[in-house]
Each structure stands twice: as structure tokens, then as C-alpha cells.
Length: 407
Image (cartoon, rainbow, N blue to C red; front, side):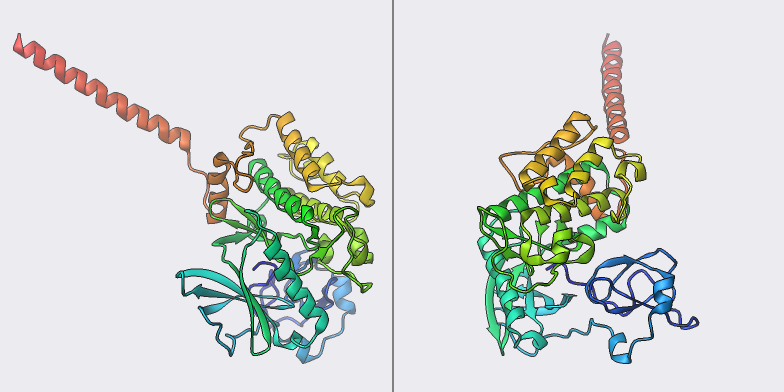
């Protein structure tokens, strides 16, 4: 239910301005022209078609001819489906992407909200897209883990396949990153949970291949859910290599793809997910993508210790052999780095509840999700203690006064 773009009629990050001449820049991922007329040089914007974030480059925009009108229409034109899915009452559209539309619906038998992903009608006759859609449903059905979106139902109506997923009441990691760099407590809690989800997926021979902030959902309790397995590949669990992708094409989101995935998605293994997660880790702490000769996160954000630099740098190694071999080893490295530095307030994991963030981390994540500042807990406790002490003193004084009068 993530990875889809929220409905919008303008390029995200840029306000429309009819007074300026239109300038367009093509997305490096899907090649769709995006209006950058009101965007500043170097500003990060989000492609209206595929959701990739890229920097505005005036020189590139100046060389881009004005595209034909049909390419300028908003891709987000989803309406309620013409068919009815038995047992579900569709309420509205909550997201849209290249493959289809996600609707918010009510499961009538249980009176609960769910998310329904419907394949776009234009792809219904495309065998490759159909296989990818069904593969996502199959991957979710086989991956039962508290940090992975749960599939509920699957079917087809009027030639359009669909499947039903749990609805997460919260926000995506993208929403949190857009509020600014995360603190180390939240960062560790979220990364540990993502690693757990990838451990489970890789153990079941599934490589996600599209790890990015839009595909990571966080509910109001701080629980992480990995979503959008539309590009997932089934792999040989011993060799951890893709044995399903046959076309020599790059699949994924360009800014988060490992170098080998950009060349050929057929050759990737679970270490490609480790690379993508490394990009996410860097962006969470700095607000920027690690492009080309990137600066270590500790030099961008003074709150980041150098030990974290080493962990992220290993994730982002160009050679897959230089990365962490598994998500479990990455998780252990994150824990060790935070523990060794004795970071104040860093949550410790609970092995008995592998999908649940540490209790002490939840309030901080909830405040960020709700856009609120942290409350002065210690000051509040001191006030409560002072009130209690005053009450005890007044009671004691009253008793003494009564005793004196009695004498």
C-alpha cells in the first residue's frame, strides 16, 4: 500500500506559477517530464509518475524541449472502480502508481478498514505485468512477519486482478524524513525493524528490490511495516540469486538501486537490498541521498557518531562482496555501533517480540508521526512531586494544630 504516490496535480515540492515560462526536466528513473519552473537550482523534487526524488538542474532543464500535452497531464486520475468487490465497500483512493491504484475500503464482515490494490486496466492484458502483480500477492502470502504488510484476500473482477492488504494507520518513512533528520534513537529502532523484515524475506528466498522510504510504513505505535513487493524476486536460498527475472532491464527506483541492479536486475541477490537500505539509512540521518562521492553522515549531521559512518559505508560498497552479507549481520553491526558508543536513550531490542519496537522508543516516534515536540517529562514529574510534598506538609500541619488545641 506504499510506494504509490499521493494524488497531486503539480510537481511535489514546487508551487505552480503561471507567470513564469514553463521549464521541464525529465526524471532520471522513468523519463517523465516534470515542471521545474518554480524550483530552485539543486532543489529536491519528487517525480509525479514514479516517485523518485531528484535534484533540479537548470542546465538539463534548458536542454529539455517542451513535451507534448498528453505527457503533461497528471498521472493521478484514478477514480473508483466500475466493479464491486464482494464483501468490501470501497471508500476512496489513497494512492496510485505505475502498476495500479490502492483504495481504502471497509471489510464488511469485520467492520475494519483495509487497503485494496487493483491492477490498472491498461496492464490487464500485459503478461509480464500480470506476473509481477501476482508475484507480489504470492510473496506477501508466504511472508508472515510482524514487520511485513499482511495480505488478506485476492481475486479478480471484470478482468482486473486485485488483492486486499491490512491498512496501516500511520505514515511512511518518507513523511518522517521530510520533517528533518531523525534522532539516533528513532533511527536505530526503525532500522532494526527493517532488518528483521528483510531477514525474514531473504530466509524465504525473496529479494525485495525496491527498498525506499515510500515503501516503509510506520504506525502510530512506532511499528514498521515493509510494503510493496511488486518488484520482489524469488531466489535460490543457497545462492541467493534471481532465477525469475529474464529481461535485461533495471528494475527498482534509480536513486536506491545497487550498482549491479542498475545494470541488470537479473543478477541481484539479497545484498542489493542491503545497499538500498544503506541509502535509506544515510537519508534518514542527513536528509540527503548519498550521490557519487558522498560525505560521511557525521560530517553532514554533527549528531551522528563516526561509528555509524562505517556501517553505512559498508552498506554502500560498490562491490557486493564488500557489503554486509545478510540483513542479520547489518542489524548486529547497527546494535554494536550504538551500544559501543553508549548513546543516551538508545533502545534495546526485545528478542521475545521481534516485530515490536522497544517501549521506550515508541513515544519519540509517535511524536514525530504526529508532528509534535517532545514533552518536558522530567519537569512535569518534578511539579507532581512538589505538589505531593506540599499536600503531605499541609496534612501534617493540620494534625499538629488539632493536637495543640486538644491539649
